[in-house]
Length: 226
Image (cartoon, rainbow, N blue to C red; front, side, top):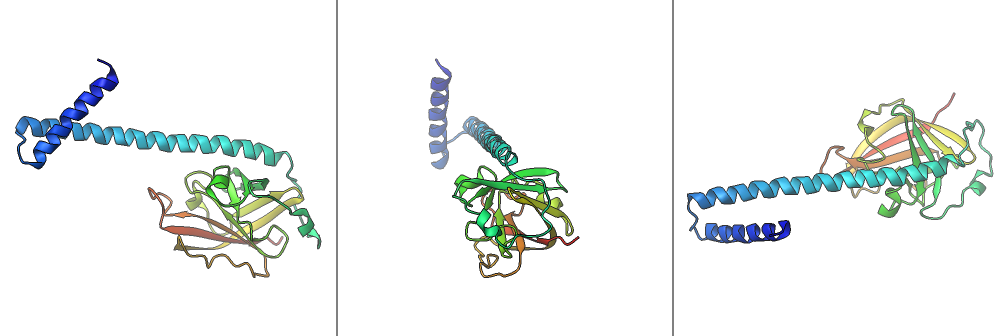
């Protein structure tokens, strides 16, 4: 008898036990067998969930690594001291394109920035919300990412920490000034009419929540003045 046949045979027997339990016809040995089956079931379910979570992290790491290598091939390491008034001419991206890199000194993490914030884009790195601005445009720049992949350990960040947004035309440095926690469906954090530059970074919250988190942790960082 193969492993699969044996498994099917045992499952069929346990289904009979469950039916008997519902009818109140299970004796003590049956209760023991039923409890043993449920224990096995919970263990298998736990292994499956851990395996799936591990696969997601591994797959995300592979995708992120490829995009990070791509970003490193074209971003500049020169800090932008003075913004060109025609800087917007440098920004013409399509959804899914690698547009730059986010470096977080406190965590020593380099993350690729991808145009778009749908799941398809977020599996490759940090997503840039398409309708918001880019560095140097004096608008809101909105970046988003998953708390269990690109933004792991985000809870360690504090006011005063830096974010370096590296683009093809230079490095733009922002300082963590404020943060808030909002509902997952709260869109007021997006301000397309804003006329001052602010880097807004959003991720799911609570950080250790299992499943679809009900809130968002939002960071506001402003251009750092020397």
